[in-house]
Amino acid sequence: MRRSHDVRLAMRGVPRLYVVRSRSQVAHSLWLFGEDDLADKALAMSEDDLFAICRIAAVYRNPNYPVPAAGPNVSIDHVDAFAAVAFFEGRLRPLRQYRRKPKKDLPERFAPQYPTRGDGEPHTYYGSKRHWWSRRRRNG
Image (cartoon, rainbow, N blue to C red; front, side, top):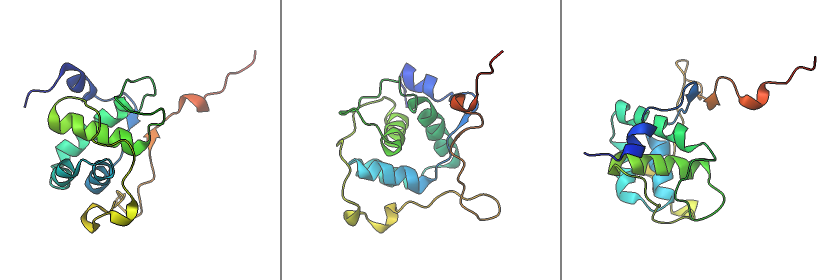
């Protein structure tokens, strides 16, 4: 598949920013915004494809990155869906719907299962090892 230049650049990721998602979380995000066919594809993707989508999502999480969202509020689910669409289709495009589908309509196969660490506990690490807002200026 031929991917656009922007998607190929985004697949490089962001240094020291790690996005941890599971296949089911990506599929859930796609289903929420009407991308049902891609959601099924996400459940069957390889580990390498999942890591590529996570790297793209790290780039798209930058609030200054111009994702084609229809509204001012872009959630993590929006960003994950945009990253998966860009990966599977080779270009970034608007999602089929901007507003989420009701959770009561969620098929069980798209229920999100969160990644776990080696000890079986949920993986709660989300973001960079060092946040820019955690660095305080020193006076003097």
